[in-house]
Length: 289
Image 1 (spheres, rainbow, N blue to C red):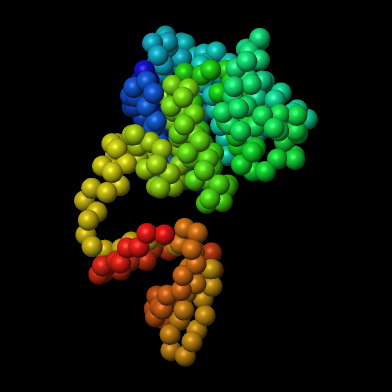
Image 2 (tube, helix red, strand yellow):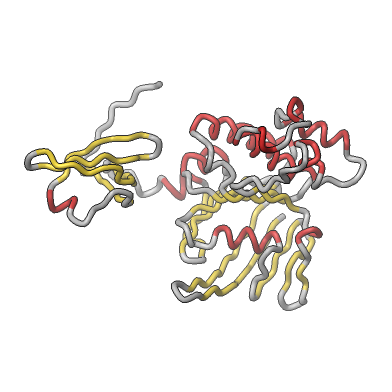
């Protein structure tokens, strides 16, 4: 259903990046793009959407060529059968929920718009303006608008990252339901491994403009990691000295923990730094919440 082979080079005073991506997907797949900031994930979405032109390569979706550098084919975004959902919602502030959703639909699609409002739980808010909505409701509007044109391909750039944990989990469930009910092929950019496991069938791990590993989430993230060690990433919230030791307050995911550190470990550390912590021996006790 989806076949792409794309190359693009970026250069600036501070960095350069060579995008070189080859990817295939079947219809109705839910695909995740995972990797650090600057790996090229958003750039890949923009090239698929027609918002940025590759230097070379081709994009074929459902048998239709969207881009081919050799044949000089480059369909504009409005001629590509896709929906695009951003993190910042990008709603029209002066338009009601219903009009925001209907903006992306073809004419005489009132029944479809009504169905989308029901699917996303927005029927009661269809006359409201975006400024009166919660973050979760705004994201539902953005998702419904992206689906209004009945796209072949749904592209999402970290659409849930600004939401709190409980709401994010709820919208992940709703997103998966919409993906299945609408028969979509979906591509999600995410930094959240839990989200990738929950939603995607296939994940492509990217670094420096290239796909370095592909497979199911379990194949990409779990294989060759059963070492008995615990490795976590954390943000330093505070550093305090107590007699001859130091105590670090750390943010790990949504939890704040404190650990003891030595003087050599806190040297050059400052609040806001991202760090990695590792336990050499790890034998956890697991309890269901």
